[in-house]
Length: 92
Image (cartoon, rainbow, N blue to C red; front, side, top):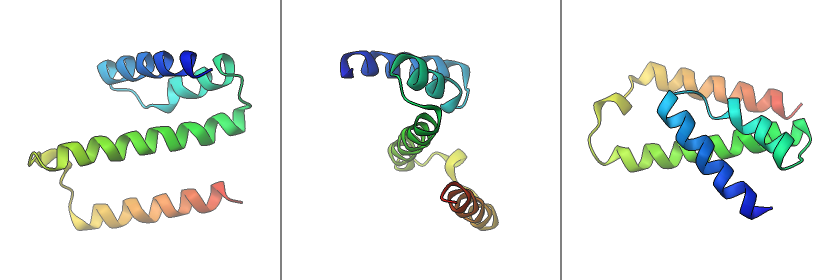
């Protein structure tokens, strides 16, 4: 299963990186139809995969002084509040 998942993940990452799309748009169908996960598990897995990938990408670019990554404090607060609301609703 891992031999299928790694090349599939790389292909999805390259396609979405080139097109600028969200990671879940292709990750969930790939997890459901190719790897055989049920939709609820695939959605949760996609959330974790895309979130971890985004944090790793952010950390790699943080040290370069890229101004696009800097956000005003009110935006950061809103992002954290919305994320916490989302995670609360997922856990219900």
